[in-house]
Length: 172
Image 1 (spheres, rainbow, N blue to C red):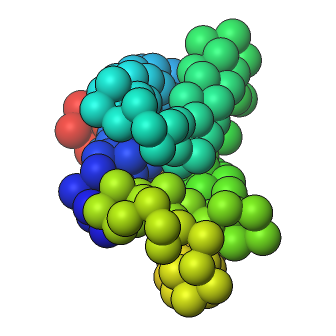
Image 2: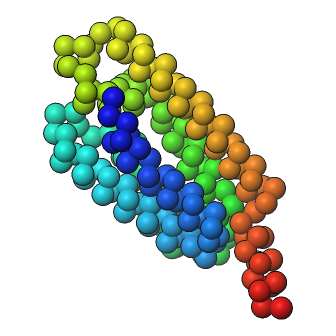
């Protein structure tokens, strides 16, 4: 499997998480747009580089998820950006986990990347499918745990509170 391409597909998710965590509600919409652009670029680059294996579910999901966050972030006002800052990371990560888990029952998302380095005659092999289902399920479980952790972080240490407190301490 070409894991580099899979990690390129995960960059928007990491970018969004880091920007939200570092900048809070003021950057919620911008973080969503940055992640949306990164997901779109990833999608276009991967489509161009692999006409035969097609579109990757992680890239499509990234475009849809961060596109929705961008719309909500720019049109929803302060309550929406506060929610994105506090719970956006966890929500996006749980969306990613759900897509990964759902792919186990259709075409495992790891199989989409593995096909690039495995000869076509093995793609329908029960062993190939089984291994990719197990790897995709493992990814889904790990990402789901991470998503729950992000939601708990948003609940216990909201970014909106952290940035307000730090703004006061800076100006004092």
